[in-house]
Length: 408
Image (cartoon, rainbow, N blue to C red; front, side, top):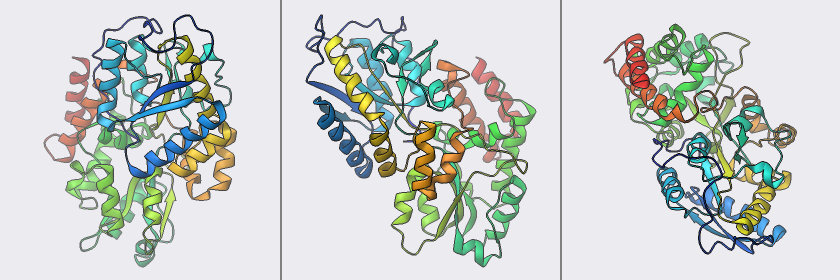
């Protein structure tokens, strides 16, 4: 998933890796790896769940470690993990949305991956930062995702647009030109949650916005640009209630000529035989810039459950992060490999995902700058987005209020 629930830290914080082993973990003083482990993830959709199960089954065959899997809905995982951290009942391996990793690590429930010999060599720097808390790496992802501009080739052609937009000015002009009848030029999600913030961040960051100072002139300019797309009618006013699945539905039904969405939507688009689509990086304020998108995806982390189970979980996680498993998982789930050399191989094998691969180079971790303070910032920014797009406040006023909310 691109966006998971980011909630306030509710478990009591303590030093990382200090949680005692849970009873019955097979741990204690044993030095041998356990024969089975428990695992928790939020891959509940049919395709994603099947792909992840295939990855785990493959690693069981390679490591000899059986995996007892549990999946919960996205918005329930972080709360379940924080409760498990407080009661020392966490599973042996957790796949969590990357912006929640620091919250979990702050409880002291996780163990550094370095103690298992899991190296960060070759990974994108932003991915390592997303899994780092207080200087130690607690989580690594087998794949990541981001946002790009997905466009309907037929609708652009009929409108006389020869190439998809690369700049904000071109996006604005093309969206206006494509808006006709029941079809809007552009669709995106501005729902009042982390999902809305996640979709707005590429505009905010690419224009020089700073999460530590939400009310900067650059931030207001970015919000003003997005508001203008709605105010002009090039994007529907319903963007404030659409999640990303709704956006994809609008696109596939022909109600939007272009959409901001993630790589995970492509398998569903491919099932629409009459839909001819293309993918390009998100347009930027100026020509020649590279967009700064938020880094999405899940990181694998190993809670402190006991020596034997931790060793077994490390064997499984190492297998998940190996190149063959990484390539297979990312291909099946339309994610991007997290090691640079593997990602380049992946781009050559899957050219339809090359725009997403290119964006990983400049993608940014949402928690790298603010750590566990990010959820509060995200909530304030999502509220400002809603206020500005519904016309309740000007972009500058909405962000000024957001800064006060975030600082309070």
